Image (tube, rainbow, N blue to C red; front, top):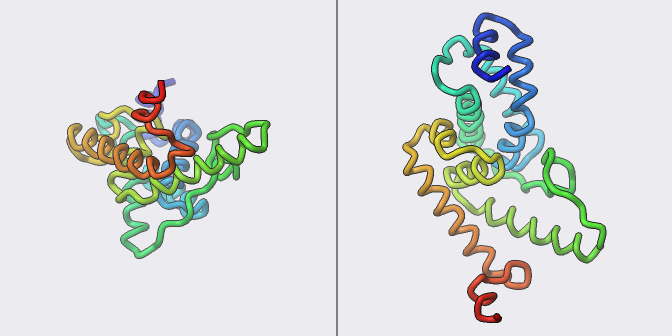
Length: 193
């Protein structure tokens, strides 16, 4: 059953249909919130509040895609989190299992240590982005959302989404180039051949 059918049933008061929507989006929504706020407890609270608000307001959803609408609610809750003066927590390591469904362990301890350091450096570069760019790149590169879906979530034009993602990627790449042992430059690789 697709989202439209489930939303239609949920709008008519069917809690089972809404539960199916929750099951479908709970992991990506939690992961997005976690990447935004950096603390598992806060991310779980944001995801839970997003679903609660979505259930209460489901009858107001008309033609907008449920996924974009739900993530927009969660994104606004993340922004509220920071407006209340809460600080960004340390982005969790994928190996800690706090981020659900990401990362695999490598058998070699040296490879595992290098992968862990690369992950830490990537997380730090994402943490350094402003909230708008961080959310855009997380929705695209972590959650795999389409640009038009992200535009719906953020409530901005498609060009703005593309610009934010391009700027975010450029800033992340610039930050990672400071660590050539872990992220060799493609220019250096081209000259080496």
